[in-house]
Amino acid sequence: MSGRPVVHRQEVEPDGAAPAGGPRIAVLVSLNFPELTEPVADLVRRFTRTALTTLHDLGARYELVDTSADELGDPAATAAFDGLLLLGGGDVDGELYGAGGPVPNSYGVDRRADDHSIAAIRAVTAARRPVFGVCRGSQLVNIAFGGTLVPDLEDYRLHRGGPGQPLFLDEKVTVAQGSRLAGLTGADRLTVRSGHHQAVAAVGDGLVPVAHAEDGVIEAVEHPRQWVVGVQWHPEDPDGSDEHRLRIFHGFVAACGR
Image (cartoon, rainbow, N blue to C red; front, side):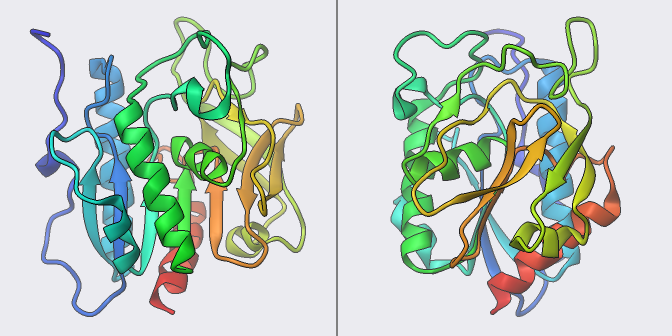
């Protein structure tokens, strides 16, 4: 374990006092999931800080829940917040979606964090509060609704970098017209930041697919009657579009405020 990188809360939280009176949002992320390497730890720092800073700048108050921490509270308590944001991280345990054996290229699995997050999603959706999932978060949303995942995308070239290349790349996705996601992004064709080897397979009960990659892989799901949105890409990647990130986060914060 010596030399393993550690991500500290103070590295990801924005400067300045919390906004007064904005919606209260629970943010679930595993800052130190298993098999963490220094390059990935740097991504966790940058992406998490960008997400939290964006919430802060939009006037939201957040509670950061590190699902890799030694002590985790009752996930049902998350329903007391005005909304739930689930960020990216390691792979979801294959047993939770019936993978039926070892998952190729599996990385960073933490069943305890998965169970806590899924319970939180179910509690928040039962309370009719908004839920927004990013990458791993979107996969957890789909599983919480009874869906499954593609364990390992055989042809990954559109979705992440190859050996010796940066993990994240620009990906083209098509958004379904008339969907909540289309209203959030203001476009039906997007260039997004992706770095994933898994994706939604069977869509969870009540959810619908609302974005696809050029190879047909599902890149986003949402609930038609509740504010539940999951995107496979990373709008909180600081190398991506600021406008795209702000539009999605603004819509989420506004929904939490209602």
